[in-house]
Length: 112
Length: 109
Image (cartoon, rainbow over the protein chains, first blue to last red):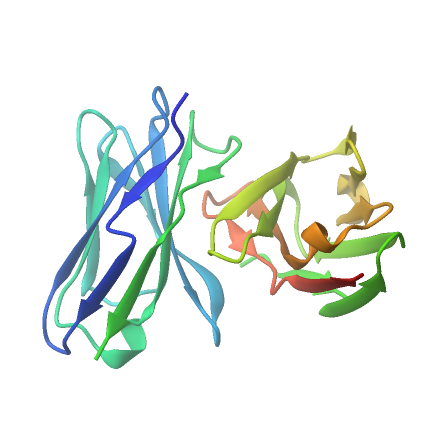
C-alpha cells in the first residue's frame, strides 16, 4: 500500500507570493492533518480535515487555509508569504479521527 | 491545551548502549505515538501506544496513562538509531496532535 505522498518536495517562493501544497493520503484513510515544523517553534498543528470538512484548526493566521476533496486528497494554501513561513510542512493521514497517524515526507518551503 | 515534555533533550551514546527516553503529558490522552524523524525530515512511526507496553525488535515502549507518561526504550543502540525522537499526543477533548520538543539521540561508533 502506498504511503502518504506530498508534492512538491521542495519549493522556493518570494515574499508576497502564494503557495499551494498537496497531500495524497494512504488509500482508505479519511482524515488528513497538516503540521508546520520550524527550528524555533518545533512541530505545530495547522488543521485537520475529515470527510471534506475542516474539523480543527491550530493557532495560525488566516493566510493559512486548506481543503479536502472527495477522494480525501488535501491541499493547503499560504497566501502573502512571509519569511517566517519558511518551514517543513508535514501532512499526516489516519483511517479515522483519533487513530494512528502516518506522515508524508514533507514539503520544504523556503521564502526569500 | 495539553503540554508535552520530553527528556532528555539530548543524548549521546556509544554503540551497543541502552537508553530510555521519557514523555510526560499534562492531561488525559486517547492517542500517543512515538516517531523517529529521519535526516530528510520524514516522521517514521515507531509505536502507537495510548496505554500498555509494546515491543518491536530492539525498541519497546510503555505508556502509563493514569500517571501521564510514556517511555521509549532502545536497546543495543546502533549508529542508525541516531536522529530526533518525538512523542505526540491527542487529548480527549481535542483532535490536534501535540508534539514534544523531541530528544536528539546521537549514537557514536
